[in-house]
Length: 289
Image (tube, rainbow, N blue to C red; front, side, top):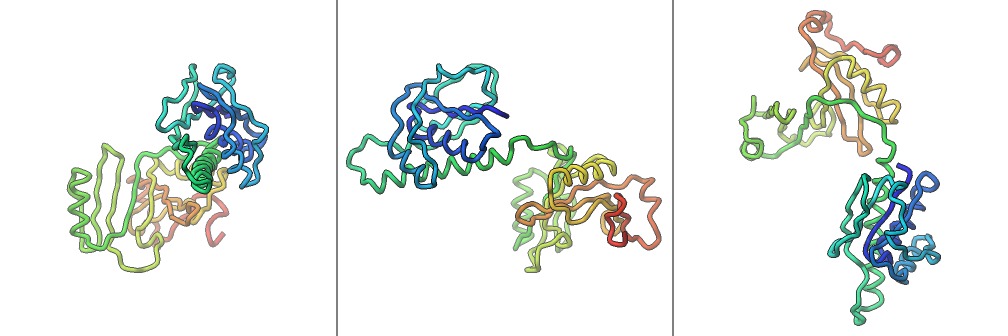
């Protein structure tokens, strides 16, 4: 994604701030432009709001969408909320970010309120652009066949009743400690676990899980995770205690644990060692290696 166009009606405030922010955030990696269906002068409050974070857009000028070469655009981002956004024709990827127009024709609004309106719009655009940067050129992750999630609850009976209603299915099984819901049509495996006040880690079953097709897919997910730069909590291994699995543990940026797993085949189960110790699937990754 090399060329991005930001559009609003006047190309005076939101799309101008988006253009300035994108140039700052993306640098030379992306070509950025902005335009409007009814272009007007760049709003002085937008210039001031951007100057407040060290970005100078005083040299910008408003442009018409007619000036944009559609064939050169990879992504169009429209920023209108209450208004009808301009339409840029063609086969192009589109995002719509409805940001409230900070400009106002009400001359009675105090200057500080105007500043705050523009700062708010600026910060909302900035946050979305930071996420967009994180998504550009991202590599393909593991192909999943099932999604597993476990959450803690304070009242297991009440939560089981609620999720039975929400998921339109009885739990497959339950004990005094947990309830497990299965929805094959949604590729969903969902577990409620009684909150016990202990530190959250994988042994408490508080985590997210992604089921993949086989052992090779778990190893492939590990290779993809290393290439992506993900934090590996436990490298690929076969474990027989509890639910027999080939599994890989990752951690997201906040430390939430993600288990990528597949269940063992009958042949693999038959090869279970007597000591039931885990067998690491990638040479050099086990604790004893």
